[in-house]
Image 1 (spheres, rainbow, N blue to C red):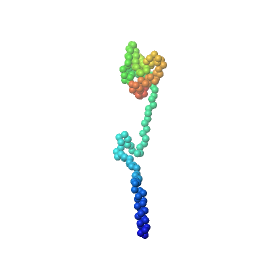
Image 2: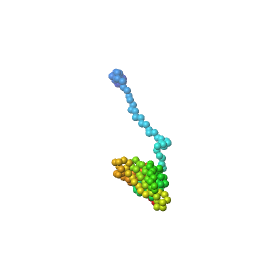
Image 3: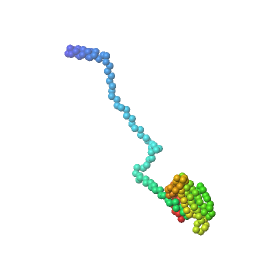
Image 4: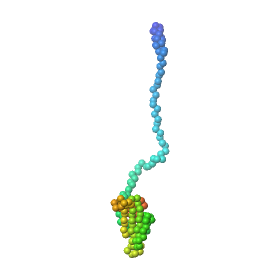
Length: 164
């Protein structure tokens, strides 16, 4: 037994001599660092909070209606001025008046004549033409009229109050 003990101690010294120049480093495996997602306790200002059980909101969009320029026939100077403002050009040829309104691509000319009772003027004729020689006669008068109505904000006024 002593012999076995001495043999074991000798073996330990031999093995120790074999590893004397070596350096052994033990590395324990590390778990990757995982960040927990941040939880906001207050709602963000750009997120709208809404109840969970709500019905969808339905928005109705009114389709654009193109009005005929003739809707102005029979209108008084006061009605026209309320809708369009002061004309760019006002020409008086007794007993008539011609009011001209200029839009981007066309000119709207309204001809006022005395009404049937002779008590004031009303639109009797409308002429719409291009503002340059190239488009003088090729302008879409209905589109031009409606563009001008939209520009001055009078489109709804004439929808609500048809020509008399």
